[in-house]
Image 1 (cartoon, rainbow, N blue to C red):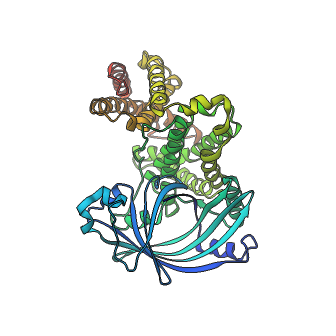
Image 2 (image 1 turned 90 degrees about the horizontal axis):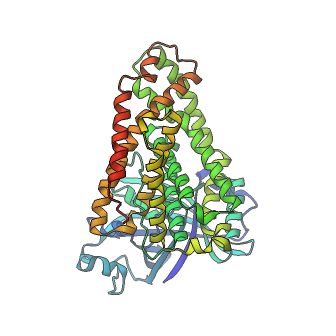
Image 3 (image 1 turned 90 degrees about the vertical axis):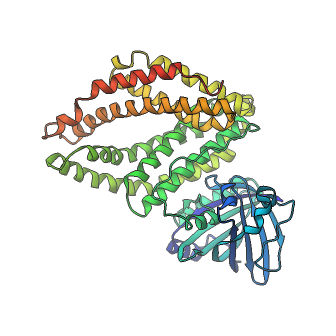
Length: 486
């Protein structure tokens, strides 16, 4: 068993050809054809547990591999791997294998689930004190009569400092644009076994009680990055409102994580720059989202047509921003920073970084609850700007609750968590509706459309007082709710 450290990058077949034709890669290259059969039970028990089992054939050689661990991290995979040689395409499941420990007698139900076939070109590279292997894979994933194409780079660190690996990744991006990869080949195969995804919502954050605060932050950040990239990939295939919304949710969650874990990153200038870039990206995607919300609330007419024109322009901006050098660089910078940023070597924050994740979570959840309780007093009487701050407080507490819930997995904690988050969701919904009203006024003012027929019903709806009362009730209920972390 060994630890694999890998950066995955996606690119188009045309850009892959440009990269190979460039002088960036070494002259010495190895070629191989690989065919991998992935196995699972009919109910996909291995996939649900985060394991993959494959037999890969390269030439006359067959290797059976079981991979486990943090396979759902964004871009950077750190996972245990078990390998044994096999004579044919029938898995060998030893008693010591995690597969046997997980499913026991159900190993008899293992069967081929899908096949991955790739042409692999590999190079050995030395850069900045790091030695790593680069693999360019082109091929197909096939499950029954469904298939999807693969064109991706994998940079696997063999030895040395990861900084060299990321330096070279940026050189690749300057030669042929690449995007952070977040899907393992096994995930691509499993995606073909069910209905095509139309949106990716936040996945559970699998924190464990033996983690330190810094390990928890890294895992949370990578989970947020993964959600963003999965929705960005959907947007690359054509605009839809829900993937854009969830991409922005992922950015909000990541920005909230930076705030929640701020004590770990104090004094890190790179952190400040990344936060500014995340704010920029979220803002650039915001206009299209605001118009999506408005268009759902307006009937056809002059105002609707004016918003449609503005929406087309906003969608062009979304595509431009997502394809920009700045966005691609931000994804690489965030991935590198989470695994080797200066914050991990700051002696002044070492105590906070090494704090048990559970103890850190208790302190942060208490702090965020107190802030929401204080800022939300007399909620119905607050100005729009102050009420928007309460909305941000509620979001941050909601995200923190989701980030940390796995650290409080006792029966009583689970019941309290559901009650607490249900009330928090109700508060967010009421504040969200109120914010939509305030935002609508700003959007229409920017378009010089406040005097257009139908605008008054959007910026001053009749149900505003009812929303304010419901929000105040939800805030009071949250203050009275038992804390699931106590």
